[in-house]
Length: 284
Image (cartoon, rainbow, N blue to C red; front, top):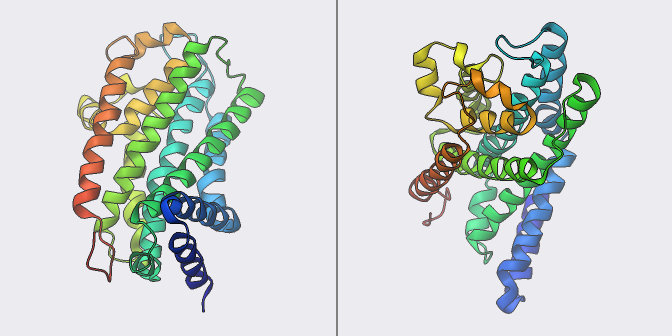
């Protein structure tokens, strides 16, 4: 019996003898498996958590001076943008690739044929995304404060904004990953297929350059996707109020940010329900 078979068997026994608490016990067991699998995989740990940090350090070493029209250091702008990228990396890239791998190695098929509630599989993924996303954001904030003098908000309102932008952004990107996994033919091609849209969105969403300085057609495309709004929402948390003058609407547009991210959550959930397949099983 392989280690993955043992995990499935253990979860099945927990469900079979758990009575009404089967979903809860299966979700806890699945979440534990997800977190252990992530933190024990050094390659995954590096590219998911450390790559955004390396990117921040490189960009912070190259660029200097203030953003035109503001008194804000370029380095501080990068921190807000790369936190958003880090969250998308954890929730979109990491999750879509992980699902493709589990389809190829038969894990999803075995889980689908076990007594485990199907919902527990996705609960485990959500726990993995939330834990790693919060850890990613915390590490980037420490780097930003220590090396780039990123100012920390002193009022609860900004931290509340930070929390809902992070959670809505992670939720929308996670659900997109579940839906996007349907177009990944196999695990070998997963990284290439997932990285392309992520890389393009980074350059057109105001992560590396002030959003208003991008060509109008790029701004239009980026405005349809979550990363632009995550980045803008996080800039409103960590950058001074006068930075809003370089935003296209000359305002933070937090209400619109919430609407767009919430709409993506709903749309991506519908897409996930329509496209996700438990390969090898006659269920969705």
